[in-house]
Amino acid sequence: MNVTWRSCAAGVAALLAVEFPVAASASTPKKSEPRMRGTIIYTPIPFDEVPGWAQDDHLASFKTFLLSCERLLVLARERTKGKMIPPADLVRACEAAGRLPVNVSRAGAKAFFEAHFTANRIEHTGREGLLTGYYEPVLHGSRTQDATYQTPIYRRPPDLVTLVDETRAAKPGTLTHGRKTEKGFEPFFTRAEIEQGALKGRNLELLYFADPVEVFFMHIQGSAKVQLSDGSVIRIQYDGKNGHPYSSIGRYLIETGMLAADKVSLSSLRAWLRSDRERGDKVMWQNASFVFFKEQKQDADKGPLGALGVPLTSGRSIAVDPAHHPLGTPIFVMAQGMAHVETSGTFARLMIAQDVGSAIKGPERGDLYFGSGDAAGKIAGSTRQRGTFIVLRPNAQARAAAGKPAP
Image 1: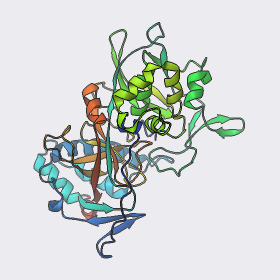
Image 2 (image 1 turned 120 degrees about the vertical axis):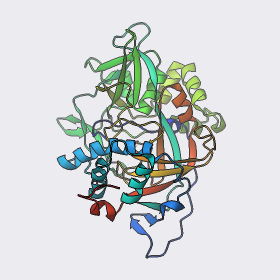
Image 3 (image 1 turned 90 degrees about the vertical axis):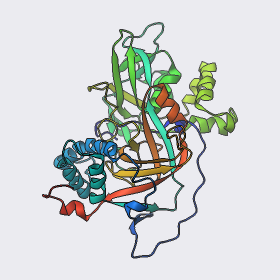
């Protein structure tokens, strides 16, 4: 997934096990109304029929969209083989966004989205929409190993090769990353092999941490702010993975009868893994996926970089399945039962697709980014709701607007 970096965006809830049931097939709308894309039906609807649209803060979404546009315009110019090439209509919408005044108003931002995009309800035969949340942990660490800081995280090994650009969809079972050997590309070492010494002696250790369980969770999130033992604060970011598929250890514990389904939570999972180090290691090894990191060379006050290579915005960035939605796409997300996020309990926000994740699969599967630290972690850990996507797809007005002032 490496354009520059991507968060793992499996979400805190990806550690757990419960999924919503498969939804019944939607009835097919009239042939004159929808546009088909694979197994998804896109049906255009007026913006004034989108619940909560008028009340949202479109300026906050517009600022997040502009961050995406900076990267999308670069990718469109470079058109580098093997990297994501953004849709032409989305690029044109970005060009129009760049012509808006710097001090554009909330009303102006709303008018921009309505002028250059069409709201689309989506219907599909897959699972019902599911929203989870993710965040950036804040941890204590050290550049050197000592009696307290024993557990390392690793730099990307030089022999690890990305075979499939992670912003693109890969067929199940495809080898996305491999180890270059004399025989060709082979699967890279698993989590168990790495933690038992497969990379020892290669000088790949980046930082050391006190708690292996928190390091495991950090792998799930894909980034962290780290307060070092010398008092400085840095950010580490994803720099590749070993290519083995992600597996939920929460599901494993339930299936093996080691934890009851109604007892699995973040706190219970942490406590269970810490209570017996040897037992905990063996369970964490059930998730063969392993992440490599690098130190992020940007202002630590900005958000971590998502798959698109731009800082994520708390409450406005969403991880999606790139097989269905190009990165940079605005998506209006609706969900009930979100009192931990909105006092009304109703979530209705225009989000920008800026990230991806190994557990984020399906046309209405989204992972909401909630920021850094423990407070954001609590919100992320409480987010697991059915959700509905209204996808904003660039329309013909974006083409017509080229060379004209944006509204």
